[in-house]
Amino acid sequence: MASGEFHLMKVPAEQLAGVVHGQVVDPGAQPTKVVRRGEGWTVDVSWEVTGELVDWLAGRWRLEVIADLVGGGESRHPSPPVELTFTPGSGRYTASIPMRGRLAPGTYDLVVNLTTTTAAGTAGALGGFVVISKLMVTE
Image (cartoon, rainbow, N blue to C red):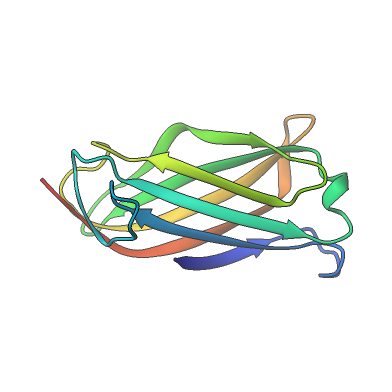
């Protein structure tokens, strides 16, 4: 499982900190770097925010996978991004993004992109990303 960077408001770590993880999982629930286009593979993501301010967070997480085909082209999945509401009292979240048939055969760099929107619907100040190393999609 790859770990990524988490970007937070400019507050001390004891008040708010976070980590994000992501991996490609084959239909048998095993991490992999090679998938068949038509099989039921997913990008599984987990993240956690900790600190004194967790209970004060309000808004929604927005999660998407950016697939960059080596040699040309970028795509984002799903469209629109997955949205999850902040859960007061718990800073742990997980999501699984189904990717069956979404990418043509080739080699990709995958990036899980995690952003937020405020309770008012504007862009939030929390977010992060994790780079998942090369993925080969076969027919």
